[in-house]
Image (cartoon, rainbow, N blue to C red):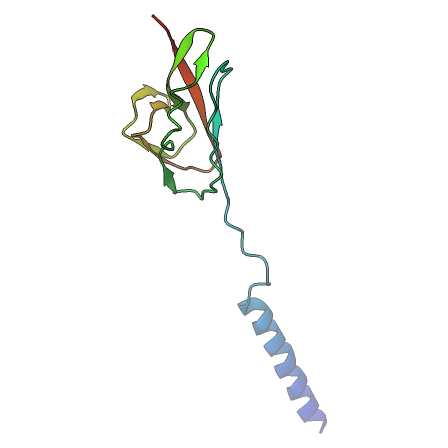
Length: 128
């Protein structure tokens, strides 16, 4: 009987060891990171700055929304030109690639979300 108890204890301890080594504790999976696209009027004195209510994951793509081109944005006698963006994974069809990861983008651009929120900053040109 004593030998049977030792064998039972051995298997009990062994099974606990394998169960604890073989399974991941519940709730330890890292949640997916969620990012936002934020439009910044850059001190606009006229017009409405677009708002994007969507939530994005890294690798998702977006284009500045139709109507989000900012055509009605103005700043002290200057007209909206395009959006300035950096800190993104990739930009397809940028209006201008300024360098150092900075792009000027418009509605035709396709932006890939990186590991951060994306801020589109309004750029203005003088009115002639």
